[in-house]
Amino acid sequence: MGLAASAQPTPRHKLAPTPPMGWMTWNLFKGDISDQLIRETADAMVENGFVEAGYKYIFIDDLWQGGRDRHNNIIPDPKKFPHGIKALADYVHSKGLKLGIYSDAAQLTCGGWTASLGFEEQDARTFASWGIDYLKYDYCNAPEDSATARRRYKRMADALQHSGRDIVLGICEWGQRQCEEWCESVGGQLWRTSYDVRDMWKDIVGQGGMGILDIVNVTAPIAHNARHGQWPDMDMLVVGLNGTGGPSSDLGGVGCTYVEYQTQMSMWCMMSSVLALSNDLRKLTPEDRRILLNKEIIAIDQDPLGKAAERLVNTDTHQIFVRPLANGSHAVAILNTAEKALPLTADFAQLGLKGKYGVRDVWQHKDIARNAKRWKGTVASHETKVFILK
Image (cartoon, rainbow, N blue to C red; front, side, top):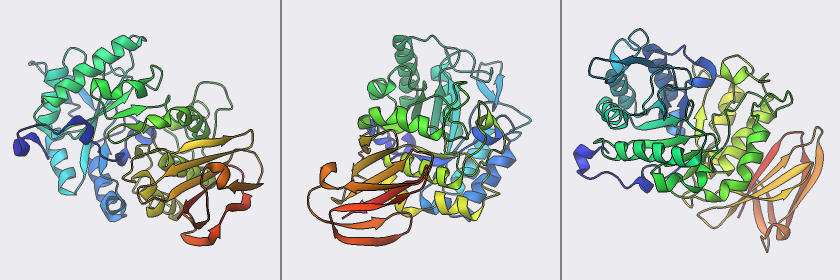
């Protein structure tokens, strides 16, 4: 609901009551974006069941800008968006979706285009007039210190709060300034936990790229900061990219197996992360759909209790996570980080879960045990088993 209907802005902690879910342009398309791409993606999200599954946003990332007009209003690239952003937002909204856009807390974005430093109030009003619902606010070309970052993010958050429209603010300073500790105090709803994700399991080339396992390991120690209206953003889902190019293929991003892609979906949901698809939704495989449309794993991400999983076991070969759920049950994830299949055991009492439990396998969609005190089985290399304990 916008302000025209409500007169008062929605309280900031209620702008993102659950982790936002949607699709983002960057990882595959980078600057090769257009009005047509966004409209076709909106159509595909409806037709392929993504809207029904809870994916509600389309996020336009960097390289949409066309500079500023003679009144210093930020404008879109006229070749990419010949009808302007307002008409595009109207189309996206007509499909039951919301539209996100991108800017940066400096004079130039990561891609070197027009950003919002010094124009926060003007840009916020412009975004509101277009019907924007979400702003990803990056931190390239800005000072490294935390104090400056806090001031710049607060300035934009306040501008959005007074823009005349409810706009979610995603703070994207890549986790280098402990944003999880101050995101709420400056007015943000989401905090990036790491540098950009690459389409790979883990960094083996040492060039600074972040693979799936790298981001799990960065996020696990800070995930306890997740709560209603304050969500970790573990960056985009690379499920379905299959090493097909774009920024996700830089720095060693050669693609992943479907087992690894399934682990990404599992762990992002266990830790209450934003779920931002970044593949081509017009060209999906059955395996892409199976992973991304699993309603049982999505329900964990969107669980109304709003807690993230705690990592209770962390060895050289495997990790175990436990997440409490609103109905009193628990989600348990067993991640095999080794390079071979392993026989693993999760003793529920040792995880702080006393008694006996019914066990449901979230990926098999079936109940596998009654009155169980533990789970024993084989976990494939890089696989994550996810169970609901009732």
